[in-house]
Image 1 (spheres, rainbow, N blue to C red):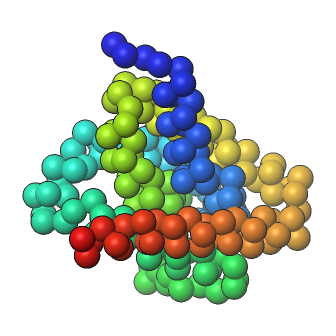
Image 2: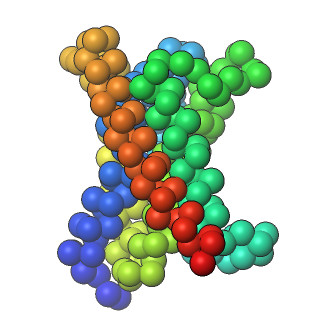
Amino acid sequence: MNFNFKEIFTAFMVLFAVIDIIGNIPIIIDLRKKAGHIQSEKASIIAGFIMILFLFVGQSLLKLIGIDVNSFAVAGAFILFFIALEMILGITLYKDNDEDVNAITASVFPLAFPLIAGPGSLTTLLSLRAEFYIENIIVAVLLNVLLIYIVLKTSSKIERIIGPNGIQIIRKIFGVILLAIAVKLFAANIKMLFV
């Protein structure tokens, strides 16, 4: 076993920034309003399972279907870009055909995937794997899942403390941050496609 506190902390912070569960509070609150209830345990466990599974089989899976990591990252950048636009402009680009959003579907899609375990976090896991021991990354993922669970469980309390205006301000600020992450992810990977 190659447990290293520095590696765990670094991987945790990188994943925390990419997953951005604090910045996603406004989206979680919107989902809670649409679905009536979100299964925090289910969403956290499914997101954690997807991330750990992708850590082991992600690169092989992408190779199998003929997609390289850079193409996957560029696609992820587009998704993050459109989510950021929704947050900044207060518009809805993604329309679910199923108007009856229930707690089970909202907990899995879009909450567990692609909001928490999305292209950004999955691409990040592949890049972390190149630098760190896998056991340290797994611990970092589990710590993030625990934090995600706490935020999901307390999102209604956080909403009451911050208030609707606070939520809108946070939404727009994190929208700009997410937009910057999307541009950086796109710029870093698009040039690799033409090398």
